[in-house]
Image (cartoon, rainbow, N blue to C red; front, top):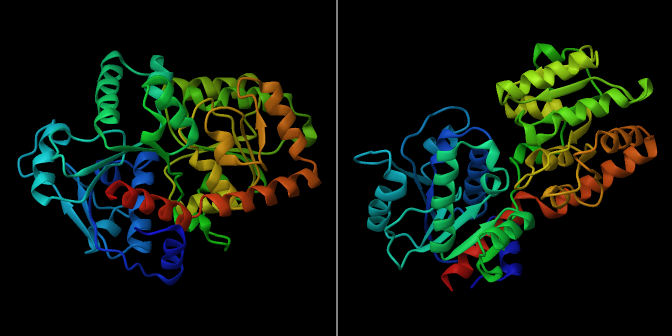
Length: 391
């Protein structure tokens, strides 16, 4: 079995002498989701192919779309794509297993909370849990969705040979809510797209809404209630004029909540400060990070919090919540706040305007993210988990 030293040497040399593994993945999100779960799947598979190219990677999906995000997987012969011979809406839950059983992979990895019923016992199964938001915030889901998520995902957690959680916070939720034993869950942190980890500065053409604007506060993510944008606006209104800067919001979300956000901006007469953009590419997003002053991300619950590490890789300071997984993602250099307290958020933003504080937070955050969430480290950890599963 590969130990840590060998794995690290293989990564450094671009080699790996271990036997070829055949690994099958539920790749629906990879091909059809272009936010969090899809980004996680694409990053994970790209990294596996980069650092461990000798293995076979089989991607099972009910359908696929070819675009800039998915072309890499469709054009690279390293990935074998499987689509249903006879598709029905329950293929992913019940029908996919027959095709996987025919393949006889060493491992099946469900990348987003579920594994199909009916897999042969000799196929080792691993399922990734990102969060249990449907259990923690049930009011944000319809009755039917809550019921389905609870039944399917809890069943997968118990049926899988092993679970990987993307944070200690998610592992804790699995243990407390589903009573999964500690030894059945391993934490495998996620990384972000490699292009965010490059040291060079990007100068992609920004959206016209940002023309000429730099040194702004930044929020990146879905515009939904738990992300704390309303509290951030109230906090911004409390800042002294000397601490106010433009505030850029990147993302889309719930229309009713977006209306509340815009109403709050009008209420405090802050229209001149706030800019909303959506539908941008990763190179454009990197440029948005590179020109910002700081990321402000007071979410009340995240499985991980990928915008936090994206900002840290771009050497930007982060203000984020002191609860859920966010202290794990942000590390000791970040400024942690009570996400329910606009006063606390305002104090943090004001404090970050001290040049010494700004420099210290930026440097500590960048060192932390490089040491803990690099693509090589997170991929090595996952490969060790695969090998442990087979031992």
